[in-house]
Structure formats: structure tokens, C-alpha cells
Amino acid sequence: MWGAAKQISYRNHKMIQNQTLTFILAGGEGSRLYPLTARRSKPSVPFGGKYRIIDFTLTNCLHSGLRRVLVLTQYKSHSLNKHLRDGWSVFNPELGEYITPVPAQMNRGEHWYEGTADAIFQNLNLIERSNSKYTMILSGDHIYRMDYEAMLIAHEDSGADVTIACMEVTREEARAFGVVVINENQQIIAFEEKPEQPTPIPSDPQKALVSMGLYVFSTELLTEALMHDQQMKASSHDFGKDVLPRLVQGKKVYAYQFGGERGRVTPDRYWRDVGTIDAYYKANIDLLAPVPPLDLYQKNWPVRTYQPQTPPARTIPGTSGTEGVFINSILSSGVVISGGNIRDSILFAGIYVDDKATIEKSILFNDVQVGAGARLKNCIIDKSVNIPPGEEIGHDLAKDRQRFTVTETGIVVVPHGFVFSGYLESSS
Image 1 (cartoon, one colour):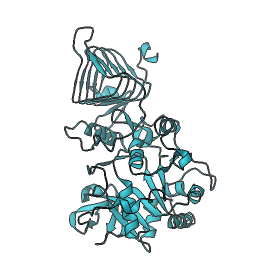
Image 2: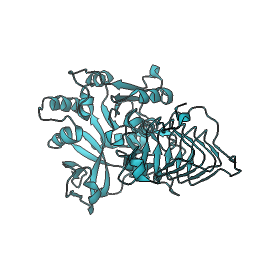
Image 3: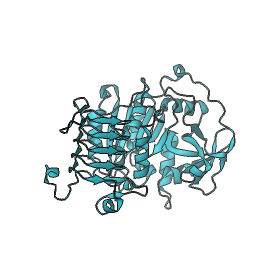
């Protein structure tokens, strides 16, 4: 059983970050997020009014004291590379600190990254050059806050070969994840991939433990495991499916509880894989709850991102004299509501909402222009879209399906730069 998480002493582990090399896997295609990933990779999809998805993992690295970070990119990486340059050039390379994008380069064979383990294998030269004692492997496409240093300390204190971040979910929820089976000492003894009947944790028959895809390896073992995995012809070269299930047979692989009392981040225990449009939409709308499940307001754990120099958001009367109104919404800088009505929505920077337009339960990316009298509901509007006066989106799904992507729950997605038929202004 988990038991009470003991408090840790950071004083005795000052050098652990300097001994750690961090990889962030950020090359995923994100096909289930299409069309939001038509021009960008999944980690660079905007989130929460001002962030990119990868900002949460990078922020965790920043506040956890990890200063040697390699971001492995592959699919449509220009937007991500630009974001890293503009928002994350914060470390000093003269002190051996860096956040560096590493594109797939076919270092070991004539193929791109083929699985999470293969992505790390193709960069073994960077691991060897780092002289690191530990290697941390993270995903760049999850929304959560976590103190990685606490996990590294737990790894060192336990003498583990591998430590896997895990979270408790109901057994019903666990069917959609990779489930880990632990003994009373928190040692992982088996893996179950999306099982129909997940094995419960020893302390609670209604809960199961799922892997978050976040690992700490002792570097020497990682190198050996990756070399061995490449020799396995039937391997898909994935950590969760191939490498880790083999390691539990003879190595010390331990689970680390996400959201416990360890660490310096407030334990909101919020973690989301925003792998589908519906999951992405819900995670954004979660931020509008009276007490959001994801705590963005911890003063000593701010989520960092790139912010352009834009004027403050404001509301002004429209041409009809109607006052601009927003209710329970998030407005980023540069937003102007000129007589429009915003409710339960998230508006990114540089948006203009004209007279008597209404926006409900929607997410609008940067530089969207909403014409007078337009009505938007349950939709996601990507960047640089000019919505004509009187246009309706999200009110007639049969009509919307003829021109846009509409999800199973009825969320309408308007792609980047979409030009409405007969509305020439939208192309300007």
C-alpha cells in the first residue's frame, strides 16, 4: 500500500539535478487532435488562453531544477521550435544549462523515430556525452504540474533501477491506460496494457494504478536496455509495451505516486492526456470552474510561456451602444469586446468581438475576428479566422458537419485561417 508519503529533505540531495539528463518526447503526430495539428505538433497546440501544451512539462523542469533538457521533435516541428526559441531561451549554456530541440536525424539507421524507446536509442550519443547518472524521460503532451526533483530523490533513496510515475484511478477508468501491478513495497511486478479487468492496488480493490509515461532510469541500465531492445525483432521499441515489461522480470522497478505529499507543488493531482478533441476541449473548460482542478495560481510555481507585447484586454460599447460583457471566461491580452457577449469561454490574445456577437462555451485562438451578430457555441476556432457578421457555428451541427470537423460530443472545430465562402474580408 502507498501509506503516508514521507517528507523529504532537499538539503541532502543538492547535486541530483546536475546528475540528471532530461528528454522530453515531443515528436508525436497528434492525429486525433486534427485539425488543430494540421500545422503544428501536438505539444505546441495552444492551451488555456495563453500557453502551449508543452509549457507544463517545461515549467515542471524549470521549477524542479532540471537544467539539461533535450526536446525530441519530429512531426511539423517549426511552430514548436519557434516557441522554444521565443519563450524558453532561459538557461545559460556557459554554465552547461540548455533546453535544446533535437530533430530526428537517423543517427542509428535509415528511419525516423519509431516508438518512444527508439527515439531515445537514436540519441544515445547525447546520453554518453552527458556523463549523467540518471536519465529522466518525459512526455511533452500532457497537462499537469509536478515536482520532478521529488521523484528523482525517491528514485535515489529507494535504490531503484527504474522509477515510473503512476496515478490512482478507478478500475473502470484504468481500462484505457497501461496498468502497473505493484506489491506491498511499491515494486512493479507486471504490466497490463488496457486490460478489461485491471488488477487493483493492494490497499483498495476499487482502484488501479496506471503509468503516466514518465520515467527515471539509472543511465547505465537505460543504455543496456535500449541496446537489447534494438536486437528484438518483434519489438515495437516502446517503453510501456516492450522495454519496461522486460525489465520488471529481473530489475528493481518501482512506482512513484503522483500528487502525494512530496514535493513543492500544491497537490492538485490533475493530469490529463489531451489526445482527442473532446479531451482537449474538456481540459480547457475545466479551467473555468469556480475552483479549477488545475492550480495555475500557485505563486511560486508559475507556468511559463512566450507572451507577445500586446495591450491589455478591454470591453467597450458596440456601435449600437450595447456594452461588452464577459461572464465566467478567460481573456488574454489584446482582446477587445466591442459590444459582444462572452460566456463560459476562453479567448487567446488579439481577438476582436464585434457588436452583439455571442460566444458560449467556446475556445478562440489568437487573432480571431468575430463579426457583428455572429453566434458561436461549443466550438474551437483556430488562429487567424475572420468570422463573418451574422455567422452561426455550433447551433446547427448538420450544417457544420458539411464544412468543419465535429466531434462525437458536438464540438465544432474551425481550422487555422479558414475562409468563409463569399466573405472576402476573411482572406485579408
